[in-house]
Image (cartoon, rainbow, N blue to C red; front, side, top):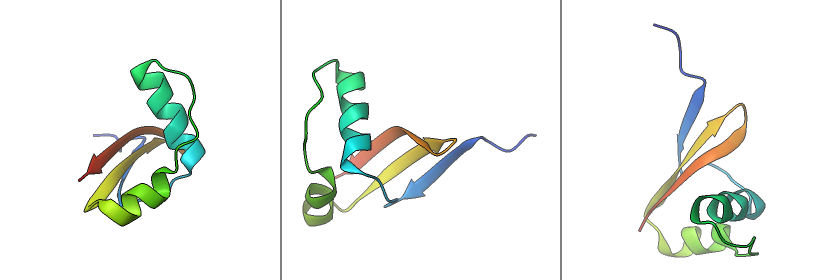
Length: 63
């Protein structure tokens, strides 16, 4: 079995620009300038980042 090209990280580092772009793409709305980093660090139990080739392709907030 070949190793997965995906990297899954619990409480992985991300930029607000990455999550804002992903959110706009997934939920079909204009690009916003939300401060995801501050929000999840203040209010969440954790989050999961999914990357492929260093690019953020998935994000799950565990509230």
